[in-house]
Image 1 (cartoon, rainbow, N blue to C red):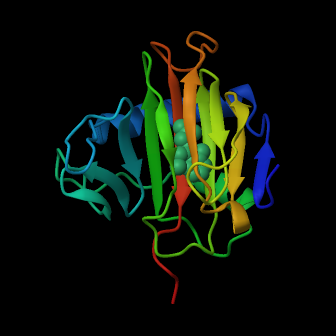
Image 2: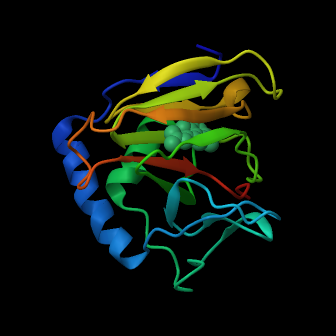
Image 3: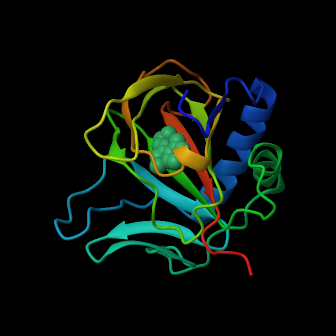
Length: 201
Ligand code: MD6
Ligand code: FE
């Protein structure tokens, strides 16, 4: 494990995963998944996204950014549920709450290319990721593009924390093992990434 990468396999037991899923279905009714596209080219991502919390991450032709409202509905993102905040408080070792929870929805052959999470102002806070549903092959490398990478299988209920020297490492999702979990209605994988965006005063 690279320093600063902390993996908590099975951090959430099945009943907690089911409770989270029910919560997510409710909040996603209010903030439906949108289709992000790549800056400039407008090429669609294969994942769909939504957000919870005061700020949400969006990508469109104009670029990547955090914004307080849903790009399609114009409404504020739904509040971050306590059950999700509790996970951040348990594993982040960071004294302030997250401001953004990006919800990534993987269905069909969706995957995510290698990227760094660097649209935040506060890199002292880790990124906490929660996996639900089908298992995925997560790839992680170093802080330079093109370096050596390693694969890690993320299954439903797993929590991954990227902090310290791992905070700005390149990572992505190579593939999803479709049908490997019954958690998500209709199948697929949901990944939640919790982030502190602004630097606390
Ligand atoms: C995913 N995760 O697991 C994509 N980013 O679907 C991420 O992009 C990610 O898992 C930062 C920290 C942890 C992550
Ligand atoms: Fe990421």
